[in-house]
Image (cartoon, rainbow, N blue to C red):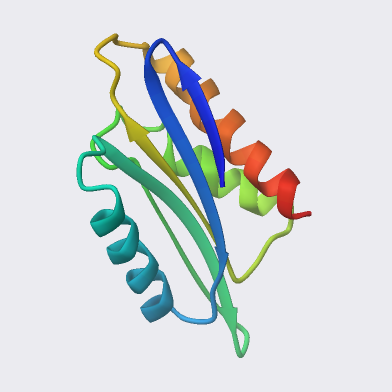
Length: 117
C-alpha cells in the first residue's frame, strides 16, 4: 500500500495477485467496505488462465481516460498478469484537473508496483 497526497486529496494504492475474476470482485467489495467514504476506487486488472486473458479497468466516475486505462497500460507495460491495481481517492475539496489526476493516479500506482517488483 502506498499513500500520496496532492492538494488535500489522498490517493491510496493497493495491488493483489489474482487467479480469477471472482477474486477481483471480492477484493473490490473488500475495498469498498474498507473505504466507504472514498470518492473513487479506480482499478485495472489482467488475469490469464489456461490461455484465456481477462482484462478490465474502471475510472469510477473520474473523467474518462485519467485513471483506469492508464493503470491498465501500466500493468501491460510491466508485463504483469494475474494482478490488479486499485487506487482509492479521498477528495480533498480542490479540483485537480485532468492532467494532475492522471499524474496522481499513475504516480501512486507506479510506486505500488515498484514496491512489489
